[in-house]
Length: 190
Image (cartoon, rainbow, N blue to C red; front, side):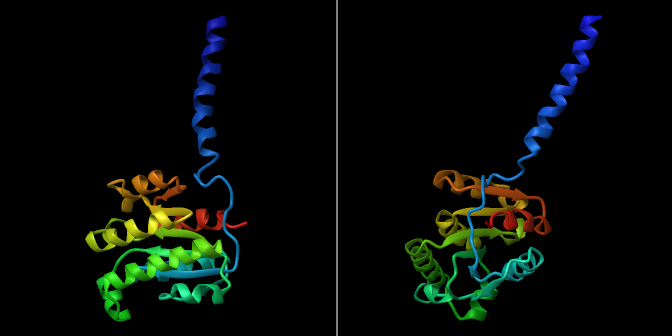
């Protein structure tokens, strides 16, 4: 009789463990970001347009400057930069900027953000379709400069974001689809 009582208790305990693990769905331990927010891109991908929608839905007000330069960061008053990470040859062409010049702009912008104490949240929401040699150059340049990264899971199938974030001890959260990225983004703000 006593053995039969232990089995349901053990089963309940085993089922409770995954539920407890799911209670903290994000790896970002506590909010890090403050308003005002500046939204920009590194790589000039159209994903920045989706980030506008996510920020609007999360009721996070922001200023938008897709080509903000380091020298203009202080004037924005931003305490957090939200960055769409991903390269687009079409977007770079429309902006009239080479990949090398965009990488240099990003490098200087991130250095200025660090100097000013501005937090950087990077998002790669385009999934696997937005990966490739061009995008990966921007991913490798931007992710180590971030304070927090959110990625759509299929965009991290090769583990590049995991590797970059682990090496720099950056919290990384993965979501199944773009529409789910707004939740961890909103939770990042104080």
